[in-house]
Length: 349
Image (cartoon, rainbow, N blue to C red; front, side, top):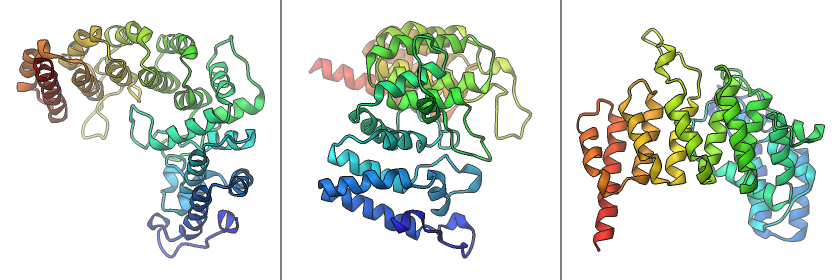
């Protein structure tokens, strides 16, 4: 417990080199050991410790994170404690759950992955096993403007409290609620509400909340394999403004498009592949073929084609891949060709 809050002193050099990480990793090793021991006393010690932790970004800073990206990476100490609860397959009290939600990093500089990462999945299992998932999901939906749900101030704070990030900025309450919703929700009964919120936000003017909310909710619908979302996700790709339609940045520049990031249409394209309905194939081909769509959108569509295409699509895939000008997307199309060929051979056998 002493190492959880121990000030490690001034770094010998740039803190990004991790000179301050020793007490954090000592405490994390102790948490891992308690999880392996797995007794009632070990569980009680971890439950007592969790609410006493510092803000998670303090640990990431001590372990070598950059101050501009504080809040964008997970804390090893929080991770080991949640991992211990998960290993013991135990529920935890309200204070632990709300603390765990506040310790989920924001994604703004971790890379816009479409699947939930290991830390998010771990958090979701602990929250659901503890019996608080409904409160969390309904608080998120209430923050996102669904009048069918209400939540107390404590739950609203738990699902909207964003860690800091000097460079990429913290999440606004709506974006953070959508992120937590995409992490915790496992009950298909809420998907109708999720679709309505997604559709409402995509029809608003371009903004950071619109982009993030739609990105996270598309990710959620893909993870849940929401077949009823297919028409909505396809409409998002066919009807919503392409990234190129907003114009291009003057080069050289680290950005290509003036469109508001993240490109939620990329998450929609990815979700269609995860849901697995063949009806989406023609829409995905059209996305890859239209260079007004952002590169990430076309890449996600190509990857989804690899999940969906069968032998009847091989010729079209091969022709499209043959002279596709962008290497990463061409490789995704070639992988789709290989997957289609594999499925064809499986049927032949």
